[in-house]
Image: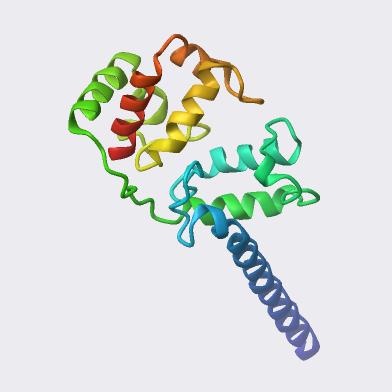
Length: 190
């Protein structure tokens, strides 16, 4: 009986050590992400999205799509190669738990008012949530960088985003660059 107790204790310690190692691996991997996406997952880099506070399912899906080159992103080339799903899930979980912050980009109140009207008319909250914080496979728009949001929406509108959701392309079809900028300022300010 004593031998069984020692064996169970040893097994528990090994499982705990493996969990610690896995957590360290995730934290170390997240540091690579931080060089572009921000130490706290909130990007200060032009045209780079914030990962903090994004829904875990959304992040996991995007990481898989990038790894599989369904959604090629040049800056991500090679970073995800060979990582198994459990690593991608761990990274997604890590960033989803970080608090999202608003950007410090200067916003124009008139453009934001126009953006709110556009958002209301386009019913952005029906997919992205009441506060635009995202849900399930829909990303958090609130607090995202304006420049990134404009570029992303243009790529949807102009059908230049590989692996993109065609529903979003339909939503922004025909919208002017100015209106996309107004929409981006509004959702970023949420």
